[in-house]
Image 1 (cartoon, helix red, strand yellow):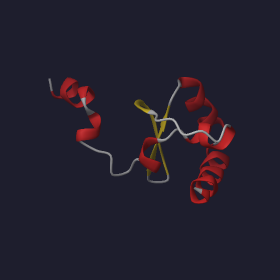
Image 2 (spheres, helix red, strand yellow):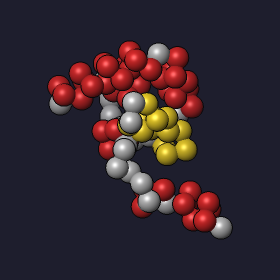
Image 3 (cartoon, helix red, strand yellow):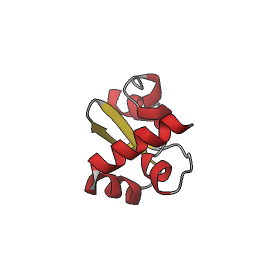
Image 4 (cartoon, one colour):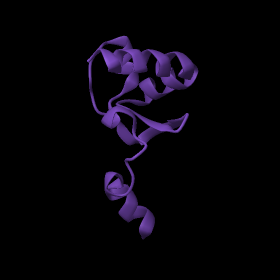
Length: 79
């Protein structure tokens, strides 16, 4: 019962570690667009939770986490 309650509204329970308000970092780096990701596609990397708009973007990030995290940080500071 608690699991269903959590997944019905995960943001209400924990978003303190979500990077950039949940913007998909792969889209920020590759397309320079800002689209929110989904909690169900989140990845924890170096203390931050990155959310992704699609499973494909999540896989891209997992294939090269260091690059995406670094470039995301640079692009994020450009805004």
